[in-house]
Image (cartoon, rainbow, N blue to C red; front, side):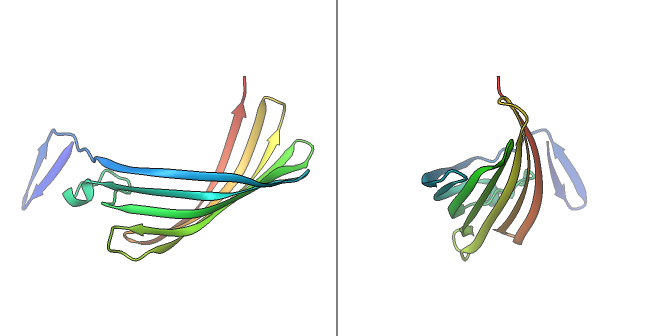
Length: 153
């Protein structure tokens, strides 16, 4: 539902808001080193997209810029610690841009995790993610905790 405010009246219409987007992404990843205790990957992650809503002043509750691009160099190290306990650390560093005429800003994503393999088919992962992203309203950074389970049949 879309609400339009016209001073001092409020007009409500029953039309759905839509925000069309176009874009693409590419992820390139290569295993660089394999050792008995760890595996090291390196790569590139890039994304570019844009929404029409930024020009139409449509906000659907998510980040919908008219143009956005991000280019990251990625790394990942993972392996077994001991017995059923494994580790995974990934990091990404690069640049991103919100709207075509804005400056490029730093982008960082750090994500360590520990996985406990209860059996060949069941595992539990506890992880953490820190991100630092330049959005249109200023620098947005945050932290997230991840708890996941994997059941294979």
